[in-house]
Length: 216
Image (cartoon, rainbow, N blue to C red; front, side, top):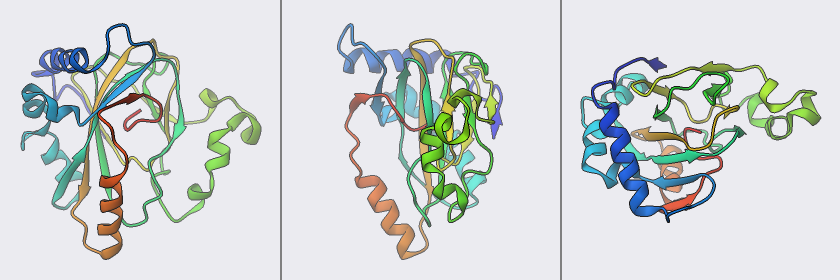
């Protein structure tokens, strides 16, 4: 779901707060992309702009149709393309990722691309990893040629999607910035509770190189 202009009132403050967090955590002159985990919790401005009840949590509840728990998020600087990837092989855990991009992005300048339907689990897409890892070899096309929907966005927009979807970004300039917040449905089965526990315990350091980071 693409929600246009819903963050216009806080977009400048979000950008300033993003820069303040990165300035404090990233060494000066750091080369390449980088990500800061749980960035929304590192700034009072970002907490209010992203985690307040009338912002992303309300959206997550409406889209998932259940009570939700906040399970983290990242601030990311991207340099270059982000190739096709999806998050995890969960069978019971339901997740929603909400992204705010801090630059205007078009299909030619790094907009998020998603392949519709690939969020479905337990089907053919779960066995499609080799093809998406090397489309040229298995599909006869470059990664940027894989059919997908490009979500062209502005800094005041929010983009919400199931992070089990295959997604990528091509053609963007260095230093593209984004902030993600991720929510999970409150688990109702033992399998979902275990998958949520595993998700929360996965290695998530405070600062890391960007690659296939959430929202990218």
